[in-house]
Amino acid sequence: MKGKPVIPPVYLTATYEFDTSDDLIDVALNHEGYIYSRWDNPTVVAVEKTLANLEGYDHALGFSSGMAAIANSVLANVRAGGRIVATREIYGGTFELLNEVLSGLHIETVFVNCWQTDQLLAEIEKGAAVLYLESPTNPMLRVVDIEPLAQAGHGQGSVVMLDATFASPVNQRPVEWGVDVVIHSATKYLGGHHDITAGFACCNQAQYEKIWHYRKILGGVMDPMTAFLTQRGLKTLDLRVQKQNENAMKVAEYLNQQPKVKVVNYPGLPAHPDYEIARRQMSGFGGMLSFELTADFDQTKRFMDALKTIKLATSLGGVTSLATQPITNTHIGLSPEDRAKAGVSESLVRLSVGIEAAELLIQDLEQALTAVAPEATP
Ligand SMILES: Cc1ncc(COP(=O)(O)O)c(C=O)c1O
Image (cartoon, rainbow, N blue to C red; front, side, top):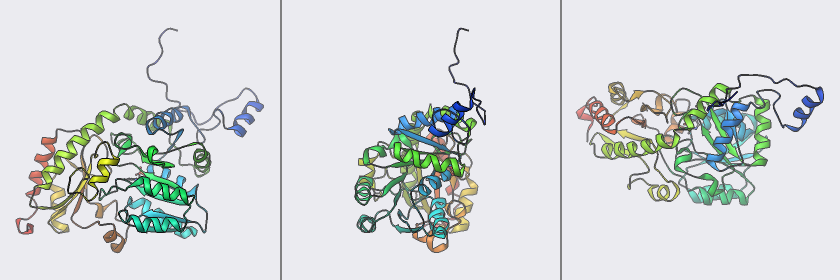
């Protein structure tokens, strides 16, 4: 028949049939071909190849969520009695994984503020199975100077992991700084439309074999429909992220001039503490920002409730702008002390800037700021 589908079929199959038992045994032993979709599926493999190419690694592994990608990658590289060095400024769920779940398995994590490079280097020097980094960080938008840390980690034999969700592959190239495993919550920029939950770990051959084995056993694999939607989302990744970079810069500049805004955390603003690192390390400053209102918790809630174009919702990275108070969701599982150490205050708002017209977003913020009581301004 003439004419081929432009879009490859979605392989909605859990299992694969063989002509002979020898063929099945061959695939089971050599991991070449398909045997069961918890191991591999052609639609998932296709999107894994796309992502591996985008990030510049030999492989990418698809997971059912960003947390599944993180948990599998870390667990594949550390044993009971092992030690992890991590930056303190990481996604709340990752902090809980390291601080609660893994500590219960006798795996110790030492947390150091991501800007305390000397202290980080000193802890790396003591030895660590995994050096775990995130950049830019959620929700404070700190930018970690990755290359010297990765070099130090390799000097001690650590596996260097980086959660690069906030930047997406458009704004930074971790492969160039020696990161061993780059992690993405594909729920965010990679999917890009708030309609999937997914994750990836990008790595080279040795790490691929280890993490693939854990994924096969722990079972958090990406499903074929999600792989299809992610593949579709990736086609517009560059366009979306460029627009989000532009919009976020405009919104950050606007917020930066508002008396009811105490501070804006956006690495593209020259006053940001990591502006110079961001300029060197990133090709775009990203679509994420956070800001603190000169307000208490209730006034901040009023601001959130007054937003119209910008949706009050957790998650990030999609075409629609979303705002959230980290204290009420992403960091709700942390103790008040750990939240304070992470810089998450009751008046902190995190904004994921979408692809709407920047003017509409600024109008929305302007009218919502009127909900913050005037007596709260300095
Ligand atoms: C930076 C970062 N990493 C990982 C995750 C976890 O991803 P998922 O929700 O897809 O499990 C999130 C979720 O918000 C995140 O923001």
